Image 1 (spheres, helix red, strand yellow):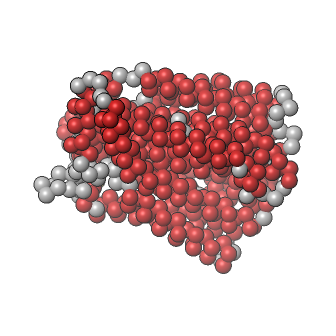
Image 2: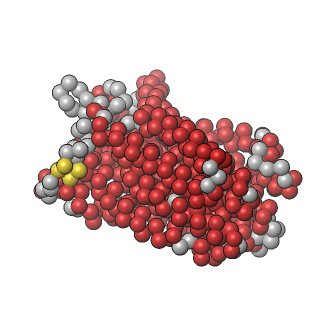
Image 3: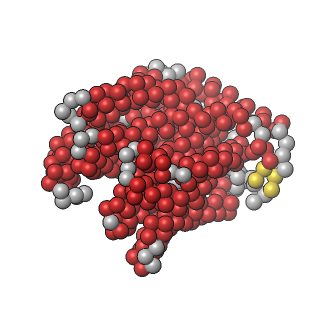
Length: 501
């Protein structure tokens, strides 16, 4: 959104001026309880104005794959198994890499927007797209030759062949990830969330209709399902790209394609790699937990049960990611604006909000554990196992109210490399070994594997809480300024032709 002078203003109305006032208020020392409540409500209002649309974006984009899976389910159990293993074994892996890389856009652009260094943002977006496309091409080979990978995790020849056919149809979706995810973070950093929510709703509705035509009317099978999903993602890419090119809201942050995007790729690549590793280790851990159940003595019941639990946890994760992204934008904007105390306030508000929400959800899951188990299956054995494990899901949901939010704080502050090391230790040196021992060496089975996941997430969450509590936010402001100064100097020193589109 622009003022009459052509300067981009934050889409959160009057936040700039109010942030300065709150920063000055905290700078004077102790704040009275009434004032603290007032500024807390103000920050909570800012959070929800961003997060409601961010949650819609996360949920409906996530649901595109679920809709496709639902239609494939009518082709038979074997077809569904092939698509499911492709989603977990290949699509989830690639999405984790792409989403992790895109968080670097949120770090730099969020801080740049807060500092009003708008010209940097379009260049960062283009750098991200270049690196994402290169990665998508590399991952495309994994999609195309994925059948041996599926056999490696003890899938049958028929299921593995179906999984590879489906994965090959998703290569175009992989390229769509490479373009869309950086654009999504670019818009979020500017507090432009509502248009993405409207587009997500529209594309979801379109995908429902397209999937029905392709699968139920034209009977196009597995490949048709994959190609329809890829096509819907490209509709999302094109519509989002047109918004960036044509909207007045992006006029100052998008100044056209530039050769400058090809300069200074190495420093940005280092942040991108750290971002990808941070998130991938987390996503792959959750998917690995599901795949591990295939090695238990009763794999069908175990896999069905843990898949149901993982689905419920994924729905909750989408809500928390929406809130976490909104919190990350707020923190990054305030760090870029040199408001360390307001950034700290944003951390407290978003963590507190998500903890309360997930505490309520955890209680609801525990109380209605039998009814929730029956929604997914009619098998008495699966219902019994899922019902017995619902208390563990409640614990995971409670931790889910803290852990993704603190990861969002890390993204806003540029701590991706630190969190990557924490994830390696907590997930792969603590949670996974404990889960394997409890799952395969005791009578706990699936519950033992899930307990390992809980312990790993708890260790990670506790470590992030300690790091966040000990953070010197004035120093984080200095780091943000240093990062933006380097990017700004690079923008001025490295000349490049600009194609104004």
